[in-house]
Length: 549
Image (cartoon, rainbow, N blue to C red):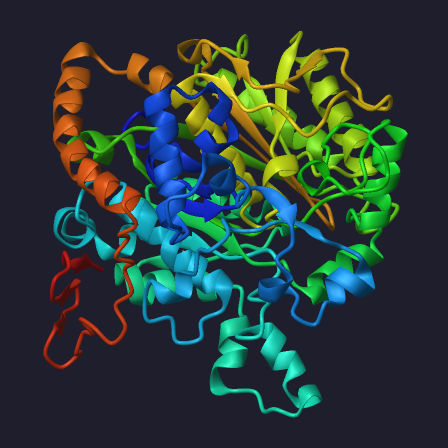
């Protein structure tokens, strides 16, 4: 039986990727810009322009600074190792011109940490309630959870890159290099410098399913009545020569030669590379493209969201996680993803969601192997659940593969679909490859309009090296509203209208380029001699609810 009080709901999102920032569905809207009305299009262009410190330029100039494109060697590859040696020149870089390190006192933080600070700030300010005064004081500090981390680590020179390179290039590692390398540092920074949280913390690295592995920790904590409020996410900055070289060795990444060969096979010419369309999920493709990004979501109980008048953007059943069993190689697929997808569909049916108009945001890396294996997973699951023309889209052709946050990119698009009613198409893929299974599927190769209120669930799918499979059903805000009685729903809508006043203030500030990133270094530190009292049954702390032991 569904426990409505403990049902996990999304009350805010925030983040950044090659399409822009996540709050107010901006990154999603970049993917469907052709379908936006004039007002929303102007808002999006203004947001992107101010995000990148741009001067008023043409629409084309602004849009060309986003999504997958030719790598800016000055920023990512000054020694031209990717450009000239590896011949890998396409990636999903953050919008051109953004410099998060200048938005706060970054102190040589790795880029993954910088994006964590940006993404969590975006998420907190998008809630519409002040964290320090309107949320934290009402929650037992033990019942706050933070689960965040990348798939690989903090990879640039300020993190692991510097730790490994320093001696070889005639320098010494600094005291920060080791600690900044740790995958748990993303969660640690959120606790220590943004939330001031004393609750549960950690991360589970699940390769490219890491976001869902972190979400699993949050959902279990909420459903087991251990947590009331959680921040979940992942941040990764993998566009550098070392990580590129690693993927090049797996033959999974699209280099210039492969892209030209793909273009020639498709009658597009082989004289000039179209970097925009270099990654083509489920099509005749050349391989994956790296991307960078950070995605964060605030997940709380339905009870707390109703009590505090928080947005309800959607909800979750469970995250299904399964390994692959015996494998041909560590990077080859196995049986696990069939299990995770089947379990996710079953989980949503158990709470009364209809699968009739559901859809999937697929992992869709753009590799030869993924197009046949993932399509077979989805096709067989659709057949088993008696689904026909099950809609499928994929994002990595436009965003690049952000590694740890990849399923977070999928979540932001799912919420955008319920906001705008448009499925972003797999627009870089003109037609499906011959080895793609599609008997029970309908791949959306173009932006597709849908009746958003009729979609109870959107499924997220993520697959990673080693057999890390995660799938999750995201439940629509319309379905959640249908579970509430009229009196409760009316009261909540009234309270949310007040919450939205604060969100509108953040909207106006941020769309004009003022973000005021939250970074409280050496602030509000508790003194155990002055600010704490311990007894047999409780701990009393300044500015927190008492902790019942």
